[in-house]
Amino acid sequence: MSRTRGNLALFSLFLATFVLGSTELMIVGVLDLMAADTGVTVSTAGILVTAYALGLAIGGPALTAATIRLHRRTLLWACMLAFLLATLTMVVTTSFEFLLVARAVAGSLHGAFVGAAFAAAGSLVPADRMGRAIAIVMGGIAVSTAMGVPIGTLIGRNLGWRGGFIVIVAVGALVLVGLLVLLPAVAGGGAAVGLRAQVRSAFAPRVLVMLAVGVLLLGGQFTVLTYITPFLLQVTGISDAAVSGFLLAYGVATAIGTFAGGWAADRDAPRTLLVANVVLALSLGLLHLTGTIPILAAVALLAWGLVGFGLVPSLQYQVATLAGPARDLAASLPASAVNAGIAAGALLGGWALTSGLSAVVVAGMLMCLACLPLTWLTARWTAR
Image 1 (spheres, helix red, strand yellow):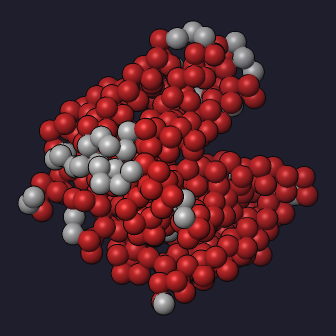
Image 2 (image 1 turned 45 degrees about the vertical axis):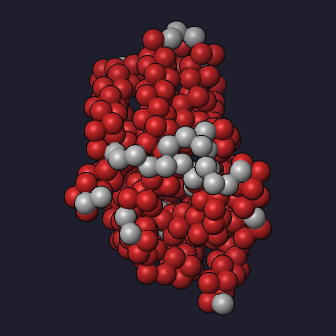
C-alpha cells in the first residue's frame, strides 16, 4: 500500500472518531432540552450519559470478541452504519426508555469501532509509526472535545437537540462513504488464534496492570475535570466568559498533546507514560497551590492538557504489545479502562467535593501519584 493511500485511510478513521466523540459528549450541552422533551428530570436524563459509558466499557469488548474473526474493514463500516442508525433512533423516538437503549447500543458500537480502528491503524503503517497512527485515531476524539462538542452544542441549542443529532448523522453518513472508499481490506486478528487463547492473552496480568494505569490516570484527571468549571469560577475567581477561554485553551492543548503523544509513543511508550504521570501530578499540584492566581491556573491547565490525553497512544501501544496475538481483542480494552476511569473519577470528585473544591484537586492529584509505582513498573519491564 502506498503511503498516500495509508494516510487517506487514517484520515477517514480520524473523521469517524471525531463523529463518535461528538455524539458521545454533545449530549452534555443539551441534556436539559432532552429532559424537557421526554418528560423526565435533568438528573434522570443524566442516566443517558451513564448508559453510553457502560455500553462503551462493557459492550465494546463483548462486541469485539463476538466479531473477532471479521475483517476489520467490514467491522468498521458495519459498526459505523449501526451507530448512525442507533443515533437516528434517538432522533425519532419519543420514549425515554428507547432513548436509553439507543444510547447504550451506540456506546457499544463506539467501543467496538474504536478497538477495530486502533487495530486497523497499526496495520496501515510500518511498526515504527504505530504510535502516530494510533494518535491520529485518538486525535478525532480529542478534536471533537475541543471543537466538535462546542459546535454541536451550539447547533443543538439553536435547532433543538434532535436537530443537533440529525446534523451528526448527516456528517456521519459522509464519513461512512469515506470509510468504504478509502479504507483497504484489513484482516481480523482472530483467524490464527482461537477466542479462548485470545481472551487469555488479552487479560494477562501485565495487560491488566496497563489497564489499571489507564483507570488511575484518567480517573485522577476526571476527578478534577468534572468540577473544573466551579473551581475556576469560585477558586480562581474568573468570569464565565474567561472560563470558556480557559477550557478552549485546555481543549486545544489536549488535541496537540494527543498527536505529540503518538510521536512519543513510537520513541519510548513506557517512558512517555511515566513522564506523563509525573507531569499530571505536578500540574494538579500546581493547580491546588496556585489556583487562586489566574495566569498560574492557566499554565497548570495547559501542562495538564498536553499530557492528559497524550498518554493514551502510549497506553494503547503498550496494551497491544503486551497482548501479543490477542492485540485485536485487547485493542478495545484501553477505551473501557478510560471510561471506567472517567466514571470512577466523577464519583471520587463528588465525594471529595463535600470537603470543598480544593479537596477535589487534591484527590485527583493523589490518584495520579498512586499510579506512579505502576507506570514505573511497566517501564522496568521494557528495560529488562
